[in-house]
Length: 232
Ligand SMILES: [Zn+2]
Figure 1 (cartoon, helix red, strand yellow):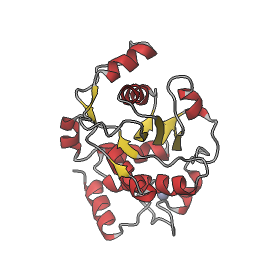
Figure 2 (tube, helix red, strand yellow):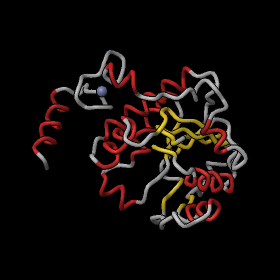
Figure 3 (cartoon, protein in one colour):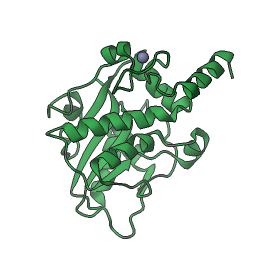
Figure 4 (cartoon, protein in one colour):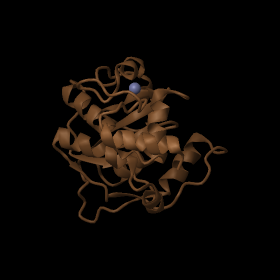
């Protein structure tokens, strides 16, 4: 571990309220960001408007009530840095903070539905073992608390790691991803339910579309989708 990282980790232990965007300055009151990051981080308007790039992306691909994201994802941005730290630098508190922000936006929103069940997009158990957690689960947990509904992380299972997608068409990608997930629902909890899927970042949307198809195959009534960030 680099000396810089050790000091960084010590700083977080002493000052737990450091900004989740830059990790350098203390977060401002009632925010997980410092003043500068709060000003620069690209929040979306997805909790106020029904039509935007995420909902348009999924339109016609599967039926949904809400589909949106907290932030716009851009390369070399605060958001990318934040998600990288969450996924690869063991900074689990970033996931919790993102979930709390989504939960607050969702409870204040006039268009955000009240789902019956919240399901985080699962990762393969070997990945979860090495990472120490599933980042989508960290994000989903505070959302479930704020919306007073149950998070179920044992219904949707990632069976195998997905092979390279780059040479595949969109429909081939979805089929390929769908085959890597399975549903374990022996008591048919999903039947006629409104499910909220939670992901850390939406890029091609193939994972969400594959999981949506699988959940509808198992009798859900409605699906909603929320992520911390989504690429334009
Ligand atoms: Zn900051």
